[in-house]
Length: 370
Image (cartoon, rainbow, N blue to C red; front, side, top):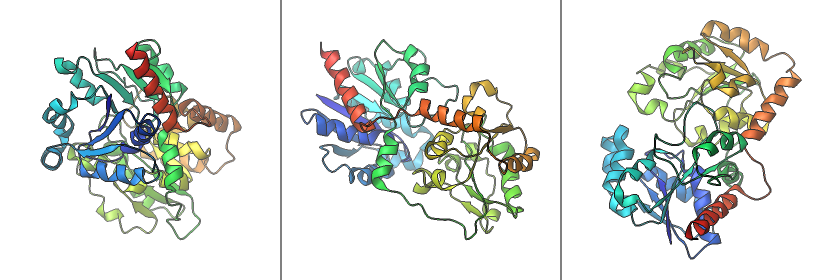
């Protein structure tokens, strides 16, 4: 039996959601050959960093052929080109596991008919997206909590959606990321995390106004740490120049370091300022705090349930008033709602998420053999 964990992205932020499950699967079932397959050197490097805190694993690591050239020259086509380039190799596995949905397109090829496709999540948001792609259905999906189970279980065969918790939290507890202070004052720190999706993100319509507001503010510090993909493509960030804000003493800009993905900022800030990014769930996981959501695209608020956990504003004119409201005593009902959303998003259990994920895959493989 061979199981391949596919990390088919030129950026490394998805690795921590899947690698811990792979490590535990190899430990619990050494007779299963577990390979970690990478399509960029950054994802391979990140996996080795995480593997250091799972020393008993028996996984092998491989950089897929052609990955270096594709990641450098064709970043927007990176994932489909890597899949096509390595399709013969990928057919050698009994099951493929990945923390994203795009690899399911391989199911269109007859050679993959007998291979089982297992999906993982690399976030816990509730944007209106489907895990499956049209008529292509996953054989098995592992989700972090009840809210995701309720959304996706109906898209799968009975018993093929399992709740395992959030492996990222477990891995970070082991890795112990920094908890440093970023400003030499006690002013509230706001975290602005715009998404990269051009039709849903606040960045193109409001981003520069937000930065200018904080550049002029004497009341707040700002950490600008957008989704790591925002500044990787011009079509996402629109060539908006942010260099003039780098010298502001009350603004820290981070467009892609590990601190922007390892929850250093979400754990150490006071106010969340975002749009459709699922980082708000990670922000609220350790404690309830004020949240403000930007909706310049006039998205339907009922499709984004987590917007109930804070104020929603449609333009930068409302930002000052929304921030002022965060200074008042928080409403107890709102704090309870935030806690409820987190509890539904992330299933807490004494058993590590990586073990739950590995055991779920073992159960699925054994059931499939019958």
